[in-house]
Image (cartoon, rainbow, N blue to C red; front, side, top):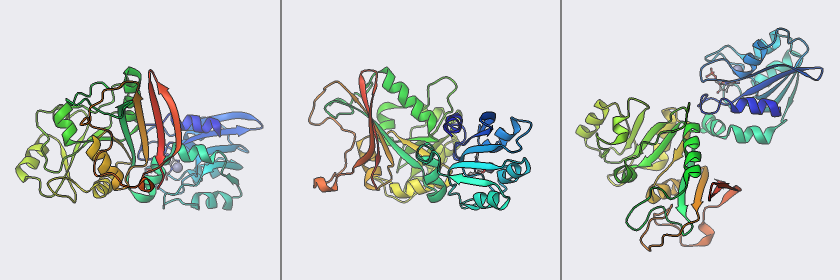
Length: 356
Ligand code: AOF
Ligand code: ZN
């Protein structure tokens, strides 16, 4: 199962919104086949593993997710597993996809196959956390990424923010972008920094770029708008956004998504719902303090990655990672769990999940 999880990870960034899945076939202590889900829409992991060996009769299949039993983009995996004479299937986690949800396991058992579930469960739950949320709620798994100085500032008092952290931390951010289906920021950040929000790594899959922009102010000559042909740009706006602006943006190849809100802000819970409907299963939020606060206050953040640079810039008015109204009582603080602390060059990296 450890090997199957390793194989599954090779699909990261290429299979979403579907899960990363890995599979290993073994017989009498020898590995006789391996496979993983390589690309969205292509063969499932189990089928790739079965295809990698001539004779699977009597083998044990280790697979990181319950095999599917539905006709999707490919035929049901259960059918192929049964037909090839596999006698035992070891599964890390059940598939909560309503089209599967235990029926895959039931089908295998009905065919006389011994099925064991729960081996490597914790690792599998972690690996597919975005898929597992999305398939049940149809909302993206949201990771809030921020980079600040030791004194908790994301820019100097004059607004300078390039760069707070060092090269290694910035490289990690590009990796995160490639892992996520979309990267989001607010119109304030776009107007101030003119970011491209792409993944600048060799061979990286490029995320869609999302601008939260209630009044559709995104300039047509921004780097985002000009690069809309390379990877999608989605503008999330309020109903009040001027129609001629929306028409001009659409003509420039930008998809405009209307959601609840007013001229000052869009409602973040509704924005996430609509992005989920548009197929976004994972979203990396790289916002300024106000947008970050809106996402947190709307309880739409699942995970936080914070880089802290060992530098001090001061300034009572300099922006920090989370603005907004904040809370008055410490009891109302948002807590992180599963916290890990690491390093990225000279910077410190803290990751954790929001306790909901
Ligand atoms: C995958 N890869 O290796 C396994 C999956 O869109 P489809 O037709 O490919 O079906 C996707 C569903 O199949 C997915 O949501 C999950 O429930 C199940 N298993 N999917 O993409 C795989 N084993
Ligand atoms: Zn399948």
